[in-house]
Structure formats: structure tokens, C-alpha cells
Amino acid sequence: MMTDIKRFHSGARASQVVVSGQHIETAGLVAKCTDKGIAEQTRCVLDQLEQLMVDVGANRNQITRIQIWLANMAYFEEMNKVYDAWVSEIDKPARACVGSQLASPEYLIEIQATGTFY
Image 1 (cartoon, rainbow, N blue to C red):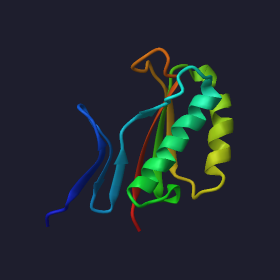
Image 2: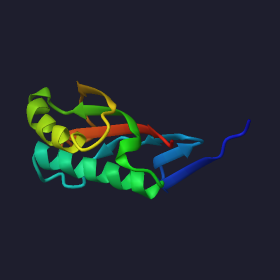
Image 3: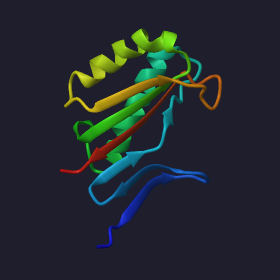
């Protein structure tokens, strides 16, 4: 069976979100507000994620898994305060969070998500 693949917000290197059948997959999202601290960058990335879900005709309750990379695990508690407030209003996705060197030093957090249409 052939499944249509739709790509949204495609650039030279990647699409920001890809839909294949019922499956939704985002790219790794980093904050556009890189001059801010971890709380603001977390909020910025979650806002971007939510908007991408809307762009493909879904909502954040359809997110099934979130992967978080932190430039420094010392940001874990502060990031979680923002994340916990955001996720408290939705069906809880599975989640992993690790420390990692990100692509640029101004990025404090990167988030990638998968979801499904139901």
C-alpha cells in the first residue's frame, strides 16, 4: 500500500514537519529567541511545536512522544517548570530528555516530537 508523504516548511536541508499516513514527525526545533534563558527558550520551542501541529491539521494532544536535548543538564529543573505547565493541559506524551552538545552555543534546548492523527 502506498502512503502519501507531505512535507511542511521545507528548507534546503530539512522539512520542519513530515506527515506520512497517520504519522507526524517534526524536525529538531530550537528557539528563535536565542538571546533568552532556558525558560524562555523552552516556551519558544513549545510554541513553535504547537504551531507546527496546527499547520498540519493536528493539535498538541496528538503528540505521542517528545525528545528533549539540553545543552546543560543544569537546566533540567528550570526547563521542567515550563514543560510541566505546558503538558499539564494535554494528554501526556512519552518523553526522553538528555544532555547534549547542540549545533550552536546559543541554543540551550532542542525538542523533537512525533504524533499521530486519530
